[in-house]
Image 1 (cartoon, protein in one colour):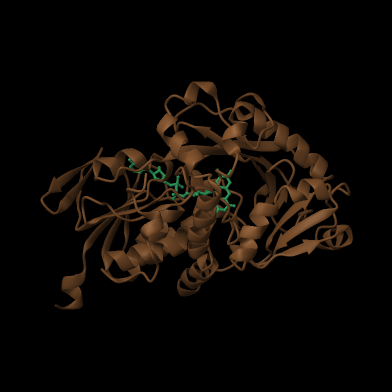
Image 2 (tube, rainbow, N blue to C red):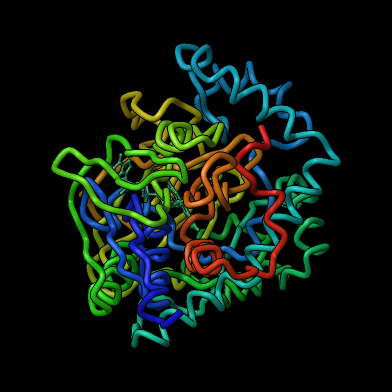
Length: 418
Ligand SMILES: Cc1cc2nc3c(=O)[nH]c(=O)nc-3n(C[C@H](O)[C@H](O)[C@H](O)COP(=O)(O)OP(=O)(O)OC[C@H]3O[C@@H](n4cnc5c(N)ncnc54)[C@H](O)[C@@H]3O)c2cc1C
């Protein structure tokens, strides 16, 4: 068979950072690729994250004993994981698996499975950027967490032990070392935990757009349409049906982030995906940044990220259904706390934004083939580290498209694990 015969029609649904990387990877392998999204590339959840290529973020959201804290999560507006009474009944099956995923032994397995993907995540982005001449978007400045005292730092012991087991490079900083690294932070922070090997995407939208441009440069086509259904033959989907038309497909990749559950189930994958919502505010910056790298205020769980367009203040998790209305109250409290943490960051807030982390109950993405149709590939559910894992995910999906061994055990990420 000639190379020309091996070219397939690939449709990638979802042009977040994950789908855009998958489309680019498939085009690099010589396929005819269509990338379909109702919005412009990178303008969904991939727009508003904290920008960290977080190769050490291998600690799941559900952890031992979290279920005991559920009542506090509902009533305490400062809890790092937020939820609301009204959404609980709709989320019951997801929540049952979420709390089950927090068993001590299971958490260890999940961390190992996240580490197996994350450890080569930076290399995967570097390779993609180098190949397409993309420069100046990711900076090698690491990721810093700061704490006001030893007691608050000690609460992260289990997470740090998981990182140590996975061989993540970390440094413990005392007050002086912290001052040298980030001199403008408030002096109440006396303990620092530094992950020097994390990359920092100084503008996440620009990165996805650069990957989308590279995709177009290889002849890839982008369609601004909403995928509604599929025409399904004996061997799986043959056409992707949108609000505006139909697209032939030999293989289809589902990369629709927090909205993946309906389409994946239609294609035989009984997945559980919810929106673990997160917010950001953009604070206008005049002049040079007071901060060099994204910095987590450890006792609060918010991040200050010095993006190209201002300081981005991000929040932790709000468990909710994808279409519940936003609640900006936690974000506003975080902005007030962030201003105290970085005196001098006194510009106006010119954007408040909400995004939906695509969250599976066990914090592991869904990667691999649909159990029902061999020509359906699933690439969603990356939760807190979708930016991080996007280029690595694309390598795996590219290998599956070409029926090659991706060189990683995909069992932990299978669609029918719930
Ligand atoms: C506050 C916050 C901070 C974060 N910080 C980080 C971080 O520092 N590092 C990190 O790695 N990750 C971080 N994340 C997580 C990361 O942003 C996500 O995991 C990632 O963006 C998910 O990418 P995605 O491509 O799967 O989803 P999305 O970006 O949401 O893309 C999915 C796309 O699918 C499209 N779509 C859905 N349904 C359809 C349909 N029927 N037809 C056509 N198109 C459809 C949507 O329009 C959307 O564009 C953060 C997230 C938040 C909210």
